[in-house]
Length: 410
Image 1 (cartoon, rainbow, N blue to C red):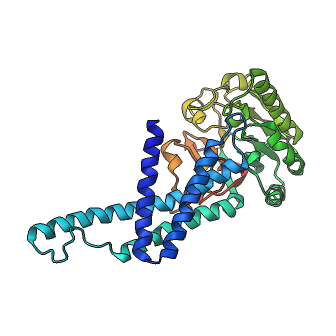
Image 2 (spheres, one colour; image 1 turned 90 degrees about the vertical axis):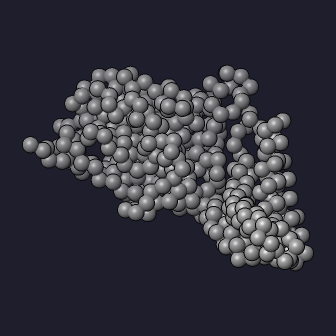
Image 3 (cartoon, rainbow, N blue to C red; image 1 turned 30 degrees about the vertical axis):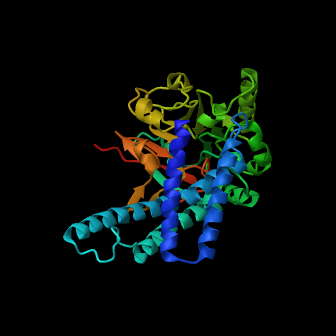
């Protein structure tokens, strides 16, 4: 009860201050009435949809839209509230000084609100509004192909120039545009790499989410050295209420089957060696292991039969696994590929200038390439989207790697 009361008070404060900003700019009763009607209608709609959320179903297109709408209206209004609140502090300070100096001829303790402050607040609030709106309509399918060339002194000679495509975090239950998904598959096929790797989260929760998209993902070309995948945290069905353990287990088995249905060899704490010429490298796949999520991954089991000298590419969905187990592991995993973070689907990336997202305060490795003592992890920004139905600044990603032989330093 206290939680709902606190939420109501916060929303009331935000709405009051936002209305103050609009009223400072326009005195028109029509404008103010329309604003109030729209704001109240949106609040009622959001609360109604959240009250209908069914934990046995999980995320739906409507819950995605509702959360997007909440962010779309709440974030700009928080900015308006901040400006109006800071102006109130100034007004109180100014009114106090004027009162005690006896210079108040108007009879009002507080000076009137300044129109230009409200105009500036609205202009700044328009930035996240338009960004979030773009993210929901265009940004979520704004696929980027990112190319990375990685050098390893212990890469087998025959694998010099070997190419890999990585995707991660498909979250097929969130898709709503078949043409855009087909476009992304075409982007994958354009690069004709040697190997295809998928680092988990094929669905949000239910195996049936992927069924409408199996035909599309089956159009991903066969790769000469195979297509391998691992599970992500969402693939275990952990985030909904199931009628029974048997139903949850049945869904889990169906999700594992879906990976096979789109032509991927699912590695469950296993490794596979691929041979090129007279050389071999190992593809190691662990089940999900996250510091704050399901820990089904068994790195030792997955690397059975491998030596320190074997060149290994590890697929592990959650990058926290690299931080806590992989990077200093005795088996020497030269390259780890992860996903999971989505870059929070929100941030700023300008190559060579800035790379920022709130998720960096949770994950040390959250997007792109990281290195420790010659061992690398690459964190894919994700193919799909989850919760917020969009992307702002952190675009959906298809990664293409080229492995190169580096000269050994004497």
